[in-house]
Image (cartoon, rainbow, N blue to C red; front, side, top):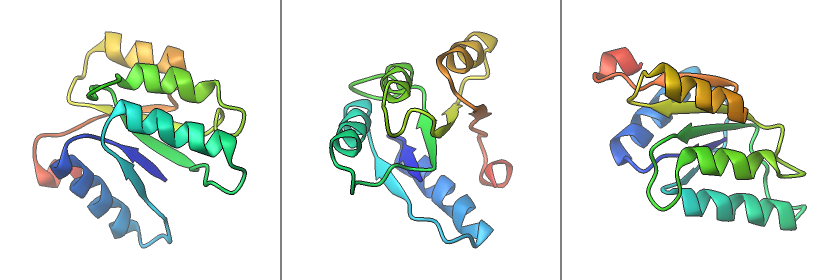
Length: 118
């Protein structure tokens, strides 16, 4: 699994929710859009590099926006079909539609409290 998220507290909450499932999951974290693109470039160029089974992708990232990362990822030969859940504090229909049209498999609005997140 790959988490593409710049907010450290959101990364913590996502990892906490994943650990609650008790599933044996290897989690990779990158903090901005450029790091995400480099992750997929490395995966594309190295058959031994991991291709995540799921990407949790923040829309509002520094250096390269989430929609640009998703566009790039969908062009990947190895990881182009990977499941993607777009996440954002925004609940706008425009953001949801844009990410869906780019190939996101789901959309999750980040809640404001720990209990809602869990």
